[in-house]
Every structure is written in structure tokens, then in C-alpha cells.
Length: 230
Ligand code: PGA
Image (cartoon, rainbow, N blue to C red):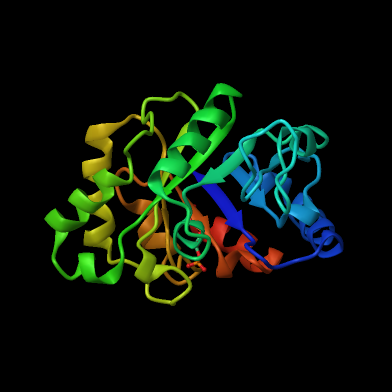
């Protein structure tokens, strides 16, 4: 399975280093999985086998005048080759439009990055049922090459993120089966994944991995979550 830890605006450079050390004590547990850590930008560092470090965000530039952003120069310093694009917090809080996201996707695709591409519906769309959800999600693929060989797609319903209320097994299953029709890419589920629901979620057909926020912040909890999925 793929286990991706999205720290968001949590952890420092020092605590990210300590976190990785804790994970590295358990490499035998991690050896059959793909484990990614997405620390905040200030904690970016080189990957340490078998853990891959990725960027939560970057701007579509080599370098230049983009105050507050980082580009390829800064990612190259740590040989970062993985990035999250389209996370709902960037769509909603940072007001990234689909057009902007598609441009960013294209740039990082051209630079051969692995891309975790996030999609997910707001609660009012979920209330209208599966058909409305799938229609909404299709708009989040505008300008996105779902056949790109290094794309992973993370389905993260907005109402499930950070709320402790994961999508139901049926909701995940229906969405992931529909996504599978669209692409051969690995499909991740995200939204309140934790040690209580990982066993069930890991068993769902067409769930190839999970993108975990809150329940990844403590290294021991994240290791427990990985071991429970076996
Ligand atoms: P959560 O966040 O696990 O805290 O719900 C998931 C995410 O936003 O990637």
C-alpha cells in the first residue's frame, strides 16, 4: 500500500528529523509499502530509504520573483521529486482555481515529478448523492492528464478532512470504482483515516493507499496505522 503523511502546517525541521528517525527504526515494517512524508517547506530534506520526502506545494518555476513560494531550485537542493497538487485546503483557503492547478500539474509533469493529485467534494454535493459527487469530481480533472505515468489520485471528501468523520466504506468504494474506470493510476483515500478505520479502508477494492493528516502527526501512531493495515 501507499502511505502518505501530510503534515500540513505542523512539525518543525527538528521534529520532522526526529519523526523520520523513529520511522527508520521500523524499516522491516515499511519494506513492502511506499511511505511518503510531506513536511512543511521549512523541513524539506533528502529522502531516506525507504521513506520518500515530498513537497506539499511549490510554484511552477525554476526560480524567480514569487514571494513566499519555492521552485525547482529549492526542491532540487534536496532531490525532491514528489509533490501534492490540488489539495482542498489550497483550493479553498489559498483560492487555487482549477485552471491554476492544471498549469501547476502540467509544469511538474513536464519535470517528471510524482504527483499526488487531490480531488474531493464539499458536503452540499455529497448530500445530493453519488451521481452529483462523480460529476463534481470530473470537473476537478479539467486540464489534468490522468494517464500521466507518475500520477497518484487522492480522493479526499472535504467534509471528511480533519473532522474525525471518514467517508463510509460504500462511499469510498463507489467513488474509487468509478475512478478506476478513468485511470490505472494508484488511488488513495484521504479524510480522517486513523487507526480505528484503516483496517476496513485498506481492504476496499481499488484503494491502493491512504493520505493521512492528523493521524500521521505522531510517528508511533503512523507506524501503528501502517501495521494495522496488514
Ligand atoms: P486528515 O487530513 O487525515 O486530518 O483528515 C487528510 C488530508 O487533508 O490529507
